[in-house]
Amino acid sequence: MEKVLAINSGSSSLKFKLFVMPAEEVIAAGKIERIGIKDSRVEIKYGLGQKYEKVEDIKDHKVAVDLLMKLLIKLEIIRDYMEINGVGHRVVAGGEYFKHSEIVDDEVIRKIEEIQDLAPLHNPANLIGIKAFKEILPYVCSVVVFDTAFHQTMPEENYIYSVPYEWYEKLGIRRYGAHGTSHRYVANEAQKLLNQPLKDLKLISCHLGAGASICAIKNGKSFNTSMGFTPLAGLTMATRSGDVDASAIAYAMDHLGISSIDEMLEILNKQSGLLGISGVSSDMRDVSQAARAGNHRAALAGQIFERTVVDYIGQYIAEMGGVDGIIFTAGIGENSVSLRAHIVEKLAYLGIELDAGENSKRGINNIISTPNSNVTVMRIMTDEEVMIARDVVALEASQAD
Ligand code: ADP
Image (tube, rainbow, N blue to C red; front, side, top):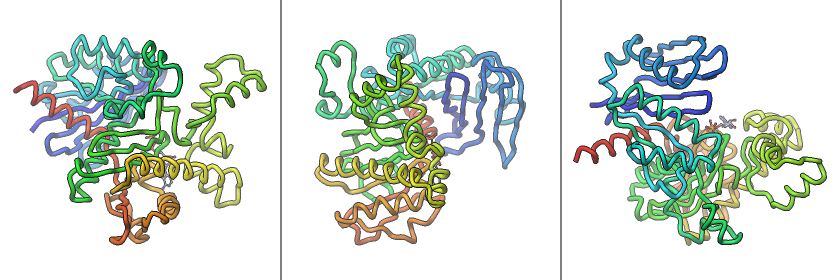
């Protein structure tokens, strides 16, 4: 039995889950927010519904990690630091260097630093977390788990853009995708529901949260995915535009007097998607409520979101030459009964049939299509953190071999 921390560190935040492995039991979870900003907030849930909360100034990630470790002892979640056997860190972009998770060493850190321009908002923050834990727990096995790594199996024809090929050769511009840890986790759960090994399956995983992406998974490997060079591409998202004709962007910049591309990217990342279309909210629950109350733009935002999901499902069925299972996961995919129903309705021409009773169940992983359906549709709750903890245990074991 060992204890493993799964860490997701952002520029001003640090989220964690502490697992007992291999049981995969979560014994504590929480977050530290507003690091480096006044009035930082610490929240830890543990034990049988206990909760620790405090507001205090935390000047940087090293202080945050130090505080977290001391709190784990003070709250009697662990007795001493030696109980932590491994720490796994989520890293957003792994470029072409990282095809799977890796144990952190100087070379791994150097490579993550080298490619930080691929995710300028995320990778530097992820690195700060990695270094802070290395200082405070220097002897503990430290592992990096990349959002992009799962997609490194995509064939060339699915990741090269139709632009001058030198852009790829000189700058590494290509489709990298994201949400790989989630797609990998739900595919693994799907094989249990389908009772068939991943190597025999063609799956389409729909990770529909605030950020949303779809992945075609052929024989257990990512075959194609909707996000691109960055997570801005693909589906309509909470505030991200998804795919847009580049000429429309140039035209809007000209006519709206937007002179900097950074300002335009801010609009495409933060003011577009469900929020941009509806003008109501970036949150699907608010958008759906406004649509029910008769707001046309809110209804339109929902319809466009669903249409983009159906577009990619159709594309990936064609590219894989069929599909055995379609998975819905993440905030919207797991919780919106009506969204799943609408999408399956649009796929009825393929002989896909929804089981309304199963579709309305909550809080479980289940098959939501009828036994007669040509394709099995599933609702699966994603768990990126447990995947991180599993990778830590697997890499630790390989190191010991
Ligand atoms: P992320 O992890 O990308 O921040 P989540 O996976 O938590 O996002 O998903 C957030 C989205 O899930 C929000 O748009 C929220 O409205 C949506 N969501 C949560 N519950 C429901 C629900 N019952 N019906 C529709 N959408 C929901």
